[in-house]
Structure formats: structure tokens, C-alpha cells
Amino acid sequence: MLRRILRTGIVTEPPPGTGAEAREVARLNREILRILGRALTIRQVDAGSCNGCELEIHALNNPYTNLEGYGIKFVASPRHADMLLVTGPVTKNMEHALKVAYDCTPDPKLVVAVGDCGCTGGVFGESYASCGAVEKVIPVDVRVPGCPPTPVALLAGILAAVRR
Image (cartoon, helix red, strand yellow):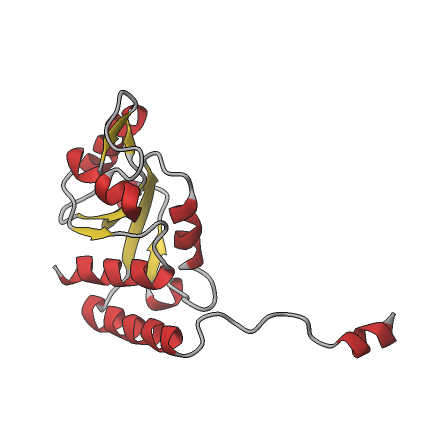
């Protein structure tokens, strides 16, 4: 067995984000530290998404992007958040919950609509079950389009919201 392991060698793939993407992540991280100078807390709200955006948001916490290493962290309550990161078209069932989360977030609050569905309603649009884009329910500061947006695009969107 040990011979087989030695013969096979390392079979993992190279880390993603080498080259231009890694430089962009490093530049964004330096800019976040320069602008914030303190921790930023984010409450992510799934208002009806397919979870594609959530997978990319989870990637923000991986060792390559290392969001928490720069003082940006996700919190469980909107009462402890500076920013709401909202994904998906807002379903009728989540409309009230999203408004409550927005009202509970202390001022000054920032809202980032994530993904094509959060920005425009996506393929779901407005219907008997969907309110459409996030901005039709609560005010939005920054939109991050994409289906799903990349972690680098999410970082750039968070940074754009903080600059406002």
C-alpha cells in the first residue's frame, strides 16, 4: 500500500486562482483593509435562490479568499450585521422575512443583491410566487450580477458597497 502511494504521488489539482485571479483577490483584500479599518459583519439572506450563489458565498471563506482573515465575517442575526447579502428572487413567502431582516439591521445598513435573480428576478421574474428583484422589496446599494457570481465578483461588490 505504501509503495502504491509513493508510486502514485500527489493527485490533487493545482490551487485555483493562480495568476491574475490571485492578484485580484490580494488587491481587493488590501483595499478592504484600507477602507474598513475595522471588522465588517454580513448577514446572508436566501430570499428564494437555487443555492448557486450560496456556494460561491461559502467560497469566500475558503483559504484562497480568506474573507475572515481580513475582518469580514458572517453573522447569524441581522441585529449584529452591517450589511445584508441577499440572494435569489424574493419569493412571496420570504417577502415579509426580508423586510423584517432589513428593519432589524442597524443603521447605516448596506444591502447587496447577489446573482442575476437578486438583481433582476432572473428566469423567475415576477409571478404569483415571486416578487422579482430584491430592490422591489427593500432598497439595494450594490448589485452583483452573475449566475452565480464568482467569489472575486462578490468581493468587489462588497467593497463597492463599503465605499458608498
